Length: 353
Image (tube, rainbow, N blue to C red; front, side):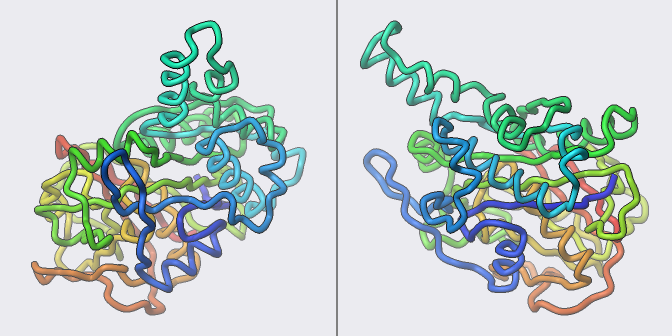
């Protein structure tokens, strides 16, 4: 399946152009997030600072998670160049690790404060996991099949599997598939309690152990198509889970999702191949279980532009072959690699269109 449109929304800005500028610019400091009795660095989306609020006018009752998802999804569709008739028939798949957890906690607070009979029904409707997908379909007038995939580390990969199945079955010709997650006060508190937080705000992907995290939020959406289009970013050539590490590996660049969500991320070392450079871009948008979607966006951009972007935080105590400087490069194949806490592996394979 071919990627013909990309939309992103993260702390660095809105749209694939803003994401490309962030990749070229390098690391930027996160903002402070207040979590009960402590403050920690976090990469947060500023919806109030958006210049174009056209889409948000349709979402006055939506929560932050749904707004982030709709903005990124809308930009992906616009970037694809699909007409209104094609857009109406596409499928929608939203991946998330935690869903609208901030809204869920707000709903529970309402029950405790006002009782079952007086809690806000709007907050309740926004707290369900499928709310973001419903808002996307409504705001973009999409009438195709709509589904939400919820899983911790591999939710985006599972969404790609489903999108590929829909395209192969001929159920739809185009699928809008993406991932979204949010940083809330409770999640920030849990992260500060359970993870090693990088107090200097720098995720160091190639340190591996002990790993440090900086919570992040955002969304990355893609329009996937079964049709041949000259404007495609790249092709999703394969998706592998728990694959055998033996044998030859065809790759011009490996993008690692090492972002500090596991205290020990040494498993990534076994995926590195001598002679194949590696990069990691989590320091640009933060530690997110759906960070693979942003890695996929970075890989698609590099395949289309034929340009490698430097790893934003190049700390490299093991002397690995990492991308230190941006440069034009002949790239045919990229692997996006994610490990979970159980050292299970998922690999998204991207190929030049």
